[in-house]
Amino acid sequence: MTRAGVAPALDEAVQTVAGFLVADAPLGTTLERVAFLAEGAIAPAVAVGLTLLDERGRPRTFVSTADLAPRIDQAQYDQDDGPCLAAYRLNQTLRVDDCSAVADSWPLYSRMAAEEGVNSTLSLPLVAAGKPFGAFNLYARDAYAFSSQDESDAELFAIQAAVVLANAGAYWGAFDLAEGLHKAMESRATIEQAKGMLMASRRCSADAAFQMLVGASQRSNVKLRDLASRIVAGSDPANQS
Image (cartoon, rainbow, N blue to C red; front, top):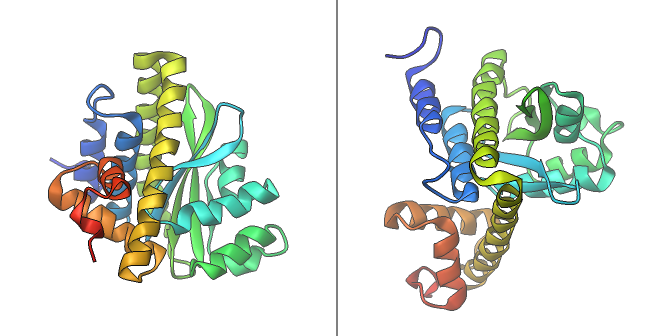
């Protein structure tokens, strides 16, 4: 049975996330599943990313469903300002309906969004025990893409992502949580290397290479980072010309 006012597909996705057990999979894998479910459930989103603080307190994009997310995020980190940073610092949702309209306030973000073909974004704080510690970010091609209902839907995923991280911290302890996030970043480096190899062998874009990896991972039921490791090691046919 779905909850009142919640679309069945969204309700199913949120319930799936709520059923994740932190002991069942590495933290990075679980957060990736949250992000991909959010992208599939919130129609305007072409990418979803999670911004968290690393062990030195610096914002990093630990999980993303497409390459454009960390590139747009990095522009914000370089300026030390932007909607995803403001969302967690101010502990409030920030919807940018037209990325070009905020060029005076966030020039690097606005410029990179234009380069990536993104015209609107939605950023929500990740909150645990009443304290924001990161942001849940969605990206869309069209201006004014996200509605008030999309905001409400995204809030459900932001809540669940925060719950996953809070539960992971309680289950593994602070050190293991930090280690889990570090491994997530290491996995991203391997995925980036595998993407580069696919781009070279298939003569495709970075986003197309990433989608190849995601599709192969889902078809073969092999974790994305494991598939990437095989490609880098030259032991997976996905990179055969």
